[in-house]
Structures are given as C-alpha cells and as structure tokens.
Length: 161
Image 1 (tube, rainbow, N blue to C red):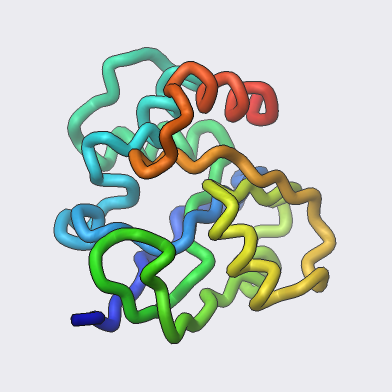
Image 2: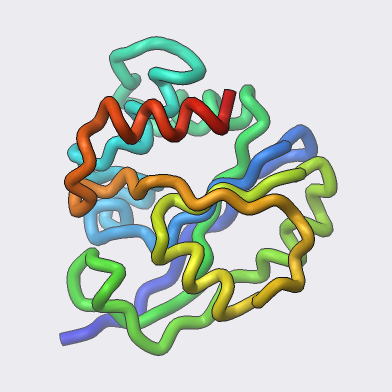
C-alpha cells in the first residue's frame, strides 16, 4: 500500500551558500521528523567528518546547527509523493518543492549538491535547466548505496571543502 507523504521544511538561513537536496525523507526520518534519521545513512557521519569531529551527536539540534554554521542549507526535491517503504524507486505521483522560491529568498546559495542520482533526476524533471547554479551529483548517503563509506566521504569532501 502506498502512502501520501510530505517533506520537511527547508533548513536554511541568510548565510547558506550551498543547498543539499535529497529526494524525500525515508520512513525512519518521517517517524522521527528529522532529516537522515536512519542509523545506517552516512549523511551525518560525512558532515561531521568534514566539518567537525566524530562521533555524531545524538541530538538533531546539534546536527542542524553544524550545517547552518557551515553555510549549508538542506531540503528535498519533492514536497509530496506516494511511496511504499523508503526506496526512491517506489516514488509515484510526486510534486516538487518550491526550490526556485527558496533560492530567491536565500540569494547567497551559489551551488546545489544532490544526495544521489535520483534527487538530481527528479530535480531536472521538475525544473529542467531553469536554475542557473552549478550542480553536483554526489554519491547517495543511503544504506542502499553499497559504495564504501570512505569513498563516499572522499567524494563529498572533495567538493564541499
């Protein structure tokens, strides 16, 4: 059975320079109302490896603050969709978030990073080439991506630092 799900509000402020876009929060993230809440998702481990130090703090407020302190905004390409489970391949009937409006409200954002190929594909489907910012497709931090953590970290670090 597919369920209609909704994304979270964007995490951004006037100092944000980079926007990282996922597709849609997974089941555990939706349950906890936190971005990247699945314990095997490497997103927070990568961010803390690059910008702070490990271990990743358990509280979501500290995680969000790390991004804000480093000029990183976070959102999802999709506002709503139908999906069974957490896999992006199960997404149907999607509606994109108002990303052009977010960028207009946060003009210091100068680049978009996609957390995986599917977020980039959905972004391109929704917006084509209408957003003239540099765009980078990064390895998905999802546990479904079997790339080793060290490889993911190296690729993310090479562009974020």
